[in-house]
Length: 110
Image (cartoon, rainbow, N blue to C red; front, side, top):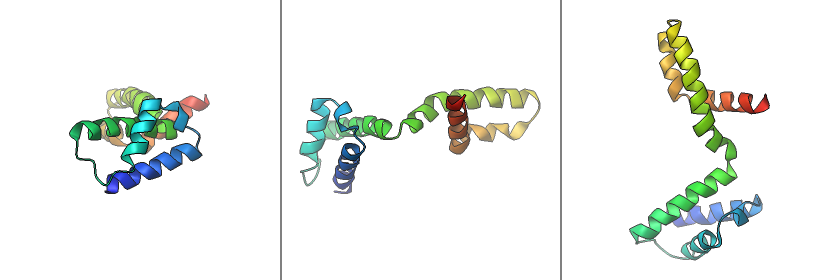
């Protein structure tokens, strides 16, 4: 029940931010029809909906997708250099999402 409520909110947020029509027609139809259900019992449908939700989240928050790809790469490079200089606690930077996001934004601004 909570999943379907979140699905409706995500659908309305996508419409407001004008990313709704970047999804395929089939994806939009699945979300619209599923949001009217009381519960999703089918595991196949649940899996498809979760994949669509992930795509929609990437469209709504593009910096998050870039952080996962570009930010991780930049952090690994910096951690490698810091470890070669003897800074052992640099390994904790690999788990720091804010640091990844900071490096991603800095890279995009250059």
